[in-house]
Amino acid sequence: RALRSIRRADVVLLLVDATTPISQVDEQLAREVTSHYKPCVIVINKWDLAEKSGTLERKIVEELRMQAKFMSFAPVLTVSALSGRRVSKIFGVVNEVYAQYCRRIATGELNRFLETALGRNPPPLYRGRPVKFYYATQTGSRPPTIIFFVNHPKAVHFSYKRYLLNQFREQTGLDKTPVRLILRERQRRE
Image (cartoon, rainbow, N blue to C red; front, side, top):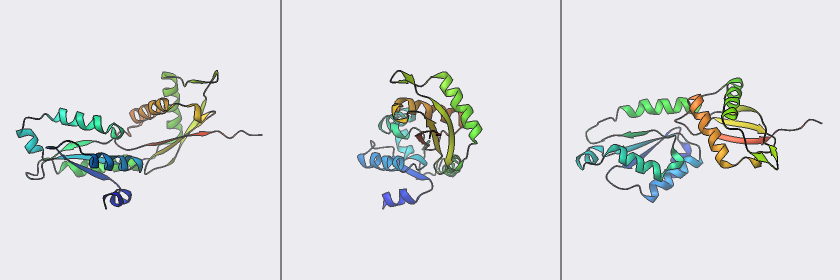
């Protein structure tokens, strides 16, 4: 049922227990959220018990981030359902995440971003020739889907794709939502 709910959801709240280590089931659900490009808010519950035990928030959040590196975009909230502490903040964060998930970015803005990112770190060479990025365009939202037209898409290493994604998040303010980047070969005119 959880997997079906993830597929249907507009925003996923991944509830984690602060008093126990991250389980394989939690990690599997997080991977499912990521594979479907769903926006997510990680909610760490039972925070009142974690504070009593002397566990630091930073330590728990770092552990969570290490185990779920692939969900670096997801904001983390610490709450206590028993006392109601910080529970009211959840809906504000959900609205913010959903607004980013639905956001559209103009092609001109995307291409300015691309020019800046390529200037900071040029693309690698492929068979002695540079990989050329011609332009970028957003083809959809929910999730924001960006297509980069390049001369050799298969030559772009995943680390450079991750660099572009990180630069894109930083410059466009889409830091709390999954973003789909697609590299496509530009069609040549005859």
